[in-house]
Length: 364
Image (cartoon, rainbow, N blue to C red; front, side, top):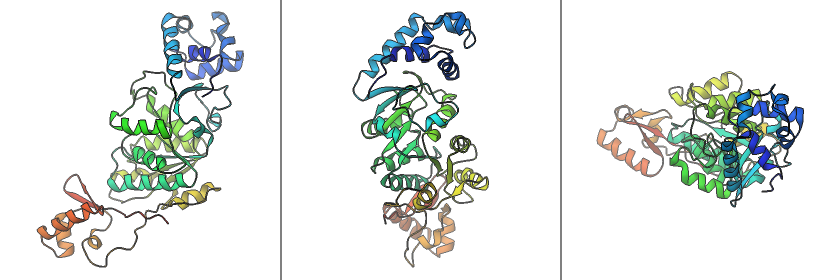
């Protein structure tokens, strides 16, 4: 990854505590490149930062942080992208608050490709995760890079689907790029670093602070042409990403679900407020234009057996007692059939003794 010759100056500005992105951009507009800003007297910079912040600008602690970042970027696969670089993602230049500097690990060329954000609940249902992975794979096969946030549930499934196609995937972190959160996704993050791209605006070593994740979400939506929400509760952070997408002029898509499912209520609220209801990858591609469906995903059910327990399950979670009544079978018969269907990938066991039918996926 080609680096700016004045990279240390960019790092010095962005690693100074208390000097936020907005202040850095304002100084860039007024004075030019970072080395010109650093040559100014504190009195000339006083309109943009407090005296204590300007004192820290040339401190020993900032110098050490700059040295550590430069050592990191010298490692294979690592890179820093500044607002002045030709490789800075053009989509982020369209948002109100683009970060002055991005830490990147992996295939930085993915930042120049057309992308779609795919986000959703951390507490995803088995069907929701399957939908996310299937949609992401189909969209990746059609040429879109899948952008998500490396969270558990829908995000992780979206990344896996993106990696399965040529579009690959970008994971935007809410931590420093050297801090993987949650640790459960460490193996997935390693795969993304090798075959996709890890991206962060936060300094190295930044931990999982709650206030950083909403900021991360604006980059997920900002990098993409649209945002697809697969599952989301009404209080889900995914809705923040969807709102950011709408504010940034991006398309917003939502997958409908059961009216009884808490993780579908956020999607239904988005649809009510104008998001496009989608049931297949073709629905998304048709709205974006310029992409050909390949290995498309659909939330509709292929043909199922004319007899058997599946026809009595419907698409909402159900317990054994209800199935006994619907199917006219004993509890032992229902339990045995559920086990067979679960092993076959047709049914998922949910908390509280509930079971949910899963859709079989087919490439067309």
